[in-house]
Length: 201
Image: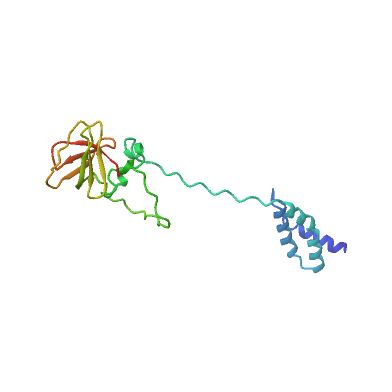
């Protein structure tokens, strides 16, 4: 019996334990050593000798999973004067007439289940739109409001001193273009007067 126990202890010493290994690592290492013992009695005695390490491994708390890595920060490469930095939506994101001038509008949430947009090259940025007028009106201070045939509504700024002239009997068309630092200019029927406006819808 002493020979069997000595053989089992020798089996546990065949491989050195890793520095700083915990009870679980020691147990796995010891079981691998015992499995290599050819003699049945010695192998059983080797496993019996691991009993204290088994209890230590069972008492060792399971380490918590590592927290997920934070998403990589996306660099904002827009220049400081880009209206997207000032107003929160870049004009470069306005690629259709329906989006033109909408940096001050709240973006609607995407419908549930909408797939992510493919990461393709963005369409070219719009600099102006020319749209027909379905209706217009003036407030008591002669500032106009126009409803366009694409559903947009634009209003003349209170700080703009110009007075617009629409054709009362014919079709009216407006051209709206980008101004300086996120502003917008409006021309009525390709006229020479330019009015400062903002989009309401």
